[in-house]
Picture 1 (cartoon, rainbow, N blue to C red):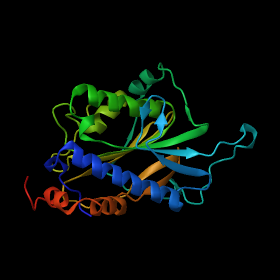
Picture 2: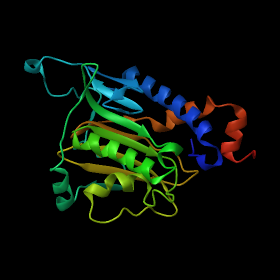
Picture 3: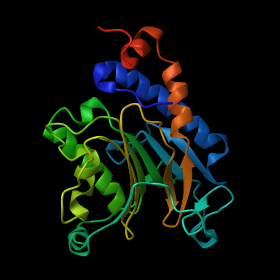
Picture 4: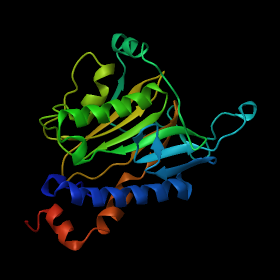
Length: 250
């Protein structure tokens, strides 16, 4: 399904779509997308902040921990993600992150592996909101978690390089350049100590691609963004679908 222009509606309408999309994504994760021993929860607390989806590993005694099952995951060496850019943290910039406190947190006794975040209007309505979102993602990356961030809004006054630019700033010497003709960004991050980003830029009206969500530093699952986006969009009231599509004005 083509990506829509979500600037046509207010934050409340997007929030409703956002919630539906998360529900469809969670269903796909728990319906066989993840390797055995992993599951997804929506709006589960991680520390004092909330991620849209947490991918969790069932806790095991330390002595019995084994390498992650690859029965559904994809090895990067076998099939590199199909993205526009693969970025590796700048050595000097990455050194700055080493001086921060890195913690791996447990949610309800289960080990957090990865986060999926969808940028909402409330995340970009002011500079402090952008900073809070970026810090949340950077904290997860520095704690060794993997993150997939979906930003369906063009860069604005408070995030001139887009949300990916704000997230990636601590790891790069130069500001991220967003292509003017493809202002929407999907970005998948491999957590510390690797710290890499796989980035895809989109134009409004382009097909929604699937994206990798890493569950280990060298293994990922392909997230069905297109199918779940389409299902969530069909769940919306016809009136608001027409507004988002540009058929109706409000």
